Length: 53
Length: 168
Image (cartoon, rainbow over all chains, first blue to last red; front, side):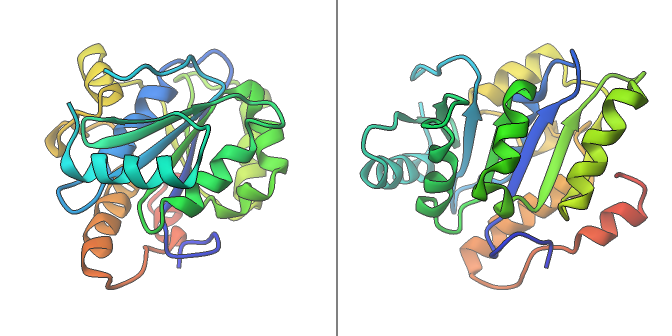
């Protein structure tokens, strides 16, 4: 098993220095983990507030 | 617009996390929280409430140290680190080594996604064929977990495989 405490995949996404695009990359990973059978969750810490589209 | 699956996850999370704003967005669910003490309690509760659903936690670099000191950090199995192509070794190496020491499979993303795909991703509308550029092993692991959640079958991939392929 990959680590962590259970079977649920939990991924941390962050950036170093001034590198941009980590938030979108995190969202892209969430998209990769989503499909007709289930949706993935993106938890955004410290970013701008999200409004419902 | 949100998928049926995202809508169901939104309902479940909203019921389990009163006071937390949850939004189904395309095929994903999104929670935004602050990086302070109160806000940092949200990821752990959200991961629990999400059940078997995959969770990606994006942390601003300024909040990373506090997050890694929180018990929720034990839930992270992998990390994606966005860094410039000319990564500052003095800046980046300690942070990456710290993640590796915590047992995370670390993948570096040296080039950000193009503008269109970034916008689509943030709206939860990125299709599988548009994931090029992201670490393949990480994408495969998440995609596999999606299948496994449906089938309630096997387990996740070992992190060591990623590192042997030179992605860490």
